[in-house]
Length: 186
Image (cartoon, rainbow, N blue to C red; front, side, top):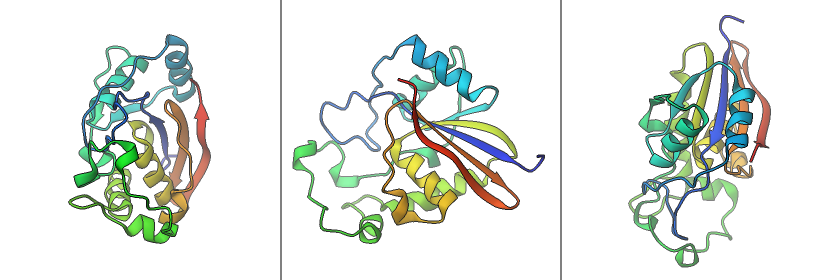
């Protein structure tokens, strides 16, 4: 279809985060094997390659498509965890008692809520021209894209998004469809 926008989303390779939260904190990706890169490249096929500006995303995109210079969009960054950035996972506050709607609305001190992230990522998706695009991004970015596709911000928090997994969405004039979520190639 001429007005169809197919969006492949790849979560970056495991991050070298040293056991600390890395949303907007820029860390490298762990190297990963050529078989996973080939499988992802074959699954996606021909597409315009995009990346979050984060090193871990750019490195992952360049490992999958050697020599590629992915287009960058700052709206594809992971959620900004503000004052929580760099904290050891064990030192993060327990948000377990919050329902998913409250969790989506909760913003860390000096950071952004998942709701705000969804608005940012949704605007980036809206700006994609018809055609096929592959976005190498973060787990939160994939969940935000799923929120746009399903119309449920709180519901998107339920999705598990593994490193190097592939999610496929399609947007047409009739709306969104979700092809699959979290397909693993690692």
